[in-house]
Length: 570
Figure: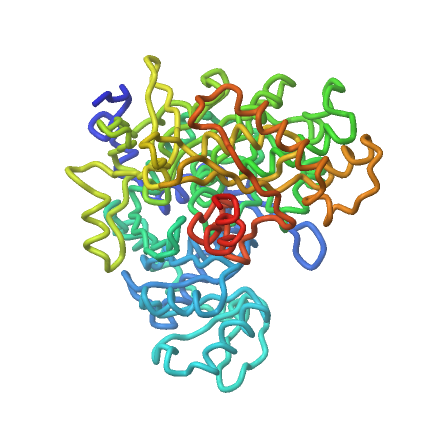
């Protein structure tokens, strides 16, 4: 096995290993109490809070939780999209020395109810009427699933739903016991330990089976500090956060790096507001998923603006010093596009189980096509079968109530990631695919579908691609066209055909056949796509075909397009 040389937990600074999220927050307060910390929209207007304002809210919210019966080690679930209260609640839960169970705001009521019940949550925090109507309405129809001792609290006033109701957090905070708030803050600073369980995050991954990843305070604190050390910090840093904080990527790399490094955090109201907000607040740091960065690229290319000097940087506000892509593989052509135009875009790699960052490309230390080098505190090696293994203080405690799954993933101190990769002589990590997604053809030839899909998606006409062929005599592919690019190509060809019909048009099929051959000219004969089908709709999260981080859920895709797939093999 080839190991990457890097700092491990044995030679990390002692203060890193002793840190907790709350100790980092307390240190930030001591250094910058009166400085602006966070800006967000409330009632249609921008609000700015200082670090001391955030701390006051956190203390009072922690007192509310304690008044509701929350004790150290109890679980508190949060079902809310991004907003200021999300961050306040996260820090308040940890101040109460409880365990935060963040639930993705896009989940359906049965999925939310499962996580509430499985975690044994004592309190469920809801954003507003939408979440209240969704969850409490579901419990009204399935009363047998309602935990008998759970209580619900809303950030915005929520109407009663049947016999269930949720009190308003702000109302409760106005009457919070200040002496209790002070005591909880003092006890958190004195008694919260790095080994204490901090959060349980449910991840379905690409298999659909929900597992609660247990991370302790040391996991979160050291990973945030390691990420911050890799990227550095500047006094005028402004992070623009838009990815769901219920995912560990945004929580560690946006929220906790902000707490540890200082500066300001600006909250976007949603993905559609990111571009105008960049021009308004001029961030220096932004994290995103590949689809977001590719969408910006395609917009500039379609408008004929891609090569205008400075236009790409201006699209992000003009001050951006680093953009980091995670959650899914970043296509090489997208990274090249950004970096050729003076905008640093690097790829990071990690898992929920690793808090999440394992490696990251950073300004001045990157190779396109790799996920950078392991960050401080993280050790990586490659197993004989090509699987990426990692160990260090970032590795989870295990899966909540799933000892068998824990034993499968954690062996001899190493987290088995399930991903395939390699380390070069300079320690850069290259991700080559998923161990369980490896295609083995009927002839015994092996192909990595994610690599081939990345090559196909480099074509402007291809929005999404799924390569298939496990156990088959040849590879095939499902292709989702880029509708705008295809429409422009049809106009260029002088064809009067609606996009819905274009997927069956002979000339369009011939066009895609040629593009596929061109994109796969660099791979071996057994990695060629022999047959393909053009789909008339994109793959979606709602249909279960994509995870919330837009990774392919192959089993669902195979099921939903079974007839189309079988037709390619007749």
